[in-house]
Structure formats: structure tokens, C-alpha cells
Image (cartoon, rainbow, N blue to C red; front, side):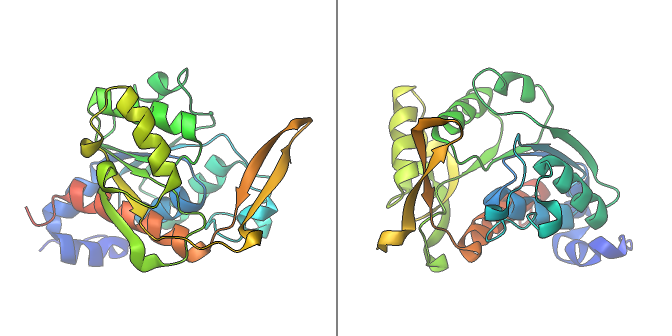
Length: 249
């Protein structure tokens, strides 16, 4: 066995030379660099993915620190894409990184997906953009995994990788299934990570926050744990690594 870069040696020992080579020759796009996407990024960078395309329009604030690996006191106010770029460079200097500071919607998705990619990670938490992204990826036959709702969950043993059609006890997945069916999408072909935990919520788990200057519009804030979002992100990354490396094939 040819000796690997010391940073990637243990990955090569498990996946083999060819497996590691496939990862190093792969391009993965991560859309959403928050709680789930940040942990996915962390694992993919450490696994030796050769090129990462990172997409997020947001900046870090103090409320992100409880669950987002890239959120620190020192990164408050910074663009998520820039913080992510620096972290990947520290982990794997050989990784090529491209960033897009854009909000993903029906108008921006097509341009983003002109980038040649081997895999896309959907870590968006907004319903409309998420459905638009899934529809486009499905129609273009681009391999992807979509994260369902990690908020309000506490039992990591209930987190599963499977088809969207098999998901249950997830309100986000329920709304997505309904919308995608109306768009003629076969939801049994959509790979996702979800939790089937039946939640029992304390009254404090849900709140509303005024949305900027428009006081008439409020968005829901959902309680969440760093452990659950981390397992979601790492489960996604694990599936991407196994798929791209062709492990076991």
C-alpha cells in the first residue's frame, strides 16, 4: 500500500488506496452551513474530499453557538462561507474550496447547479427553498442527500438514513412529501436523514421572534441540541463518504 498523506492515512487504511483516491477526485456541494451542514463539512474535509463548494447567505450570531460547530465567539458577525473556508483550509490544505454567498431559491438554484458536482448535501432548513432544491436535483439526476428536521429531537438512536417515503414523526418531512408529490416527484427515490422520534415538548421548546423591521411577520424558533444536529450532519457525511469511495463494492 502506497503511503498516504499522514492526515489521511487512517482513512486510506479503511477505504483503501482506490477509495481514498475517489474521495480526493470528488466534488461535493454543501448547501447550508448551519447546525447540520457544519458537521457534514467537518467530516468531509477530514475524509479528504478533493473539492468542496460551499453555499450559504448568512452570518453567524450568538444564538448559533449552542449547536453550530463553526459558530464561536470569534466568528460572530462573519459570513458562514468565509468561516467554513478557513476551517477547511486548516484541516486539509489540499482541498479546493469555492464559496457562494447566495440565498438558494428558484431563481438561484439553476446557476448553482451548473457547477459540476459528484454529490450535493441539502442542509437547508427553510421549506420553500428546500423543496425547490430537491426538485431541481431530482430532475437533473444529481446524487444528493437531504436533511429533514433535527430541531425538537433529543434521542439520537432515532436518527435514520433512508428514503423520504419512509420518514415519519417529522413535520418538515411531512410538508416536503406533500409538496413534492404535487410536483410529480417520486419520494421513494429521495435519500434523506430524519428522526422518527415521537416528540413530547416542554412549553418552552417553541417561541416566536419578530422578523426584522416587519413586526407583522414572525418566525418560529425551535429548541435544539448540539448532539442531535451533529449526528444528523455526521450521518449525512458518512453516507457521502461510503458512496463516493464505493466502499464495499
